[in-house]
Image (cartoon, rainbow, N blue to C red; front, side, top):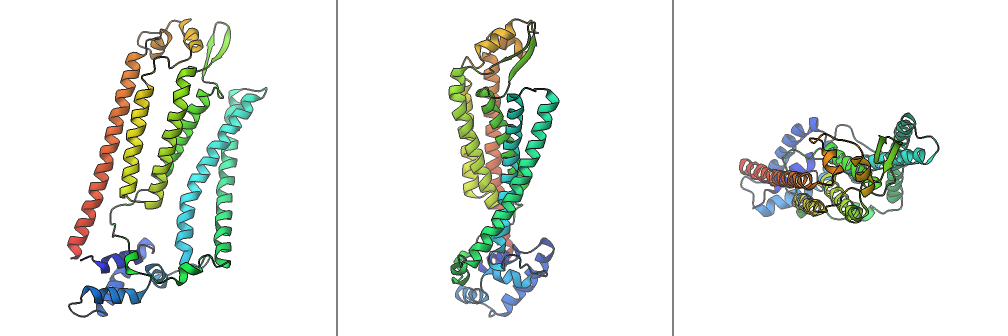
Length: 347
């Protein structure tokens, strides 16, 4: 028999501030049991909870400081959507602005380091702030219009069912900052690699006897495979972290996508590292004009012997992926254990 009371109480207090939850949980649980007989049947419990109505609506009645910027029926979804969109769009627009600012300076006549850095920082901040403000404004306008035109009316008046209750989750939520940081790092460095691969940004820049030399970093044959790998890897990471931001728990779909992301990305990179001619012939020729220490990685690149380096990198990628996949199983097992212990204590 599912513990409907625990699930109902959890669904109500989940919508309240942390400091209010303990008191509301005690009061609500007491009210429910007062409405039940000494040995209630499951049907009686279901009937009482059904009469109490939607947990979201009931939570607003318990809230000490009511909110009315957006109506209580959809306010939680409004805030949830903002928490999801603001950091993602803010970071994406900041990265796009920073890259476009840097490219714009590089395409101009001035290519001083200070000018490039200044343009990257300024364009990134301006684009990020603009993206956040646009997200706040248009999301709010969208909800206001939807309510005024009756889009949410059907949901407001729809009969709430006991089966709508989600399972109790008592484990620690996945921090929003973790998902957003992973998204930002992946998009930034993935985008940087793509720009280097396409030779849009200077990559193989160094000083030689003839002055400053800028050679393509990767060979064309390597770029042909690298771009799809980067695009697929970025797409998988974006999907995983969007689900993390939506679910905020190690649910089955979050775990499945996380495992798929690590496994597929690792396989693609290992296959990619089997390519012998990673670096462009122009870069290798320029590097071979200088003497490098035998312990220096550049020395092996300059003589075209990168087999050991590629093998070490592939091994590191496989080990890190296995560790991350193991961490997923650990989080999932921990979640299951939390839920089992919770139900055992409340039984």
